Amino acid sequence: ESRQQRASILKSGKPSVSDDPPTVQTVRKHYRRYLKLCVKSGISLGSSTTSSDVCQGALARKSLQPQANRIRQIYIRARYAGLATKEDAKEMAVLCAESKKEK
Image (cartoon, rainbow, N blue to C red):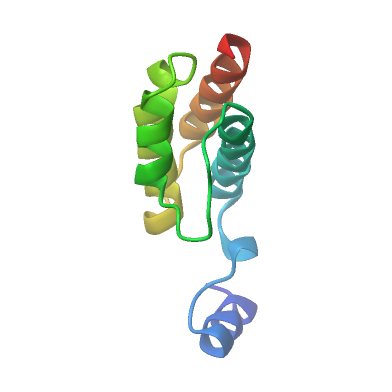
């Protein structure tokens, strides 16, 4: 951790998103795009909607079904463990693109 990162953690109590590794940022960016696609598909999102809620909604829609569980797995690991490989980021991009095509 850099001095700036430690200062950010001390100040806010948690690391900021910008402190995440680039691969984690990429996964989270793709997940945000996926959420927009879910909304366009009719999934209602609120401020307390969890990734589990999103996944359940996606599983109820044929076009989003095939990718829903894997997208959530990659997102959870990136979001809460702060871990994502380059392969995870690439897979997330592919999964999100497939979801968009099938819409």
